[in-house]
Image 1 (cartoon, helix red, strand yellow):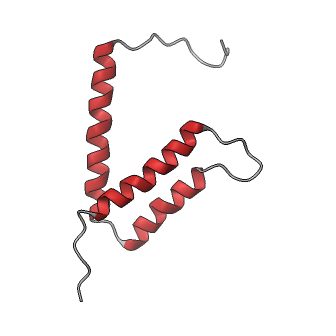
Image 2 (image 1 turned 45 degrees about the horizontal axis):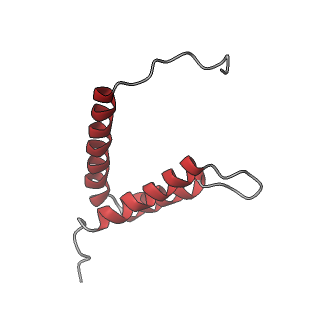
Length: 87
């Protein structure tokens, strides 16, 4: 084990379920906030997803790739709740 990482006990099934519930709640809260975000804020969220994506010369990590994709997915899902543009 890496000496810089503290020993952490494994999570029980009940703790994993609670963590899953909290992640779902946070995802939906983020979608609600993004639904009212400005175009500039949405562009910034997309830019952050690009920023954490692997850059040329670096080894891609599956968790980072998944996180970036999930960020873009949250922005897209928020679009379903945005008011249509005024004509």
